[in-house]
Image 1 (spheres, rainbow, N blue to C red):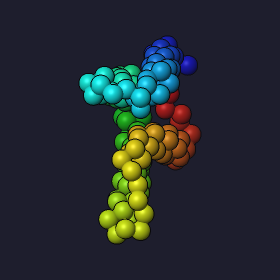
Image 2: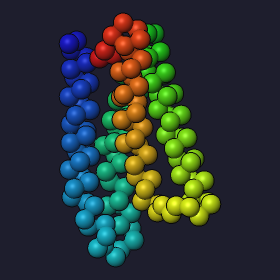
Image 3: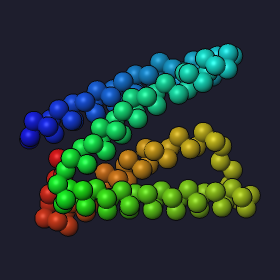
Image 4: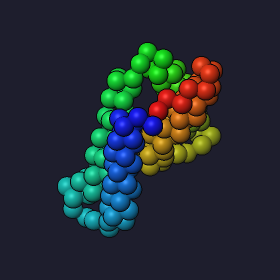
Amino acid sequence: MPRRASSYRRHVMLLMLAYVGLLALTWSQVHVTTNLALKVVLALSPIVPMCAALWLIAMDIVNGDELQQRVHLIALSVATGVVSAGSFAAGMLCAAGVASFGGDDLIWVLPAMCLLYSAARWWVGRRYGGMGCA
């Protein structure tokens, strides 16, 4: 594994650990805090390491070769289309009164995008001869 890929994975993993740690520490406090400003800070604090990880991932894609960029672009397009269609269908069901989702269901959009993106990247990578896109 190239040194850049190893360093990249280590940094993303550390940021994800920070995200999980912040989420575990702050989420239980969000529901019992009455101060609005503190509630906003507690609710949004896990977003900081998540955005940093997304930035690292974007920089890894930008620094990749054309084939890796193509695989990432196709995978991201597939994930975006699937999540968008699912969100649109859920919105239509809510608007029609068939289902009722709360705003807290939106918390699953980014994890769904990440999971579908990873699966699509693996699938598209197989199309190009099993390249792993380190």
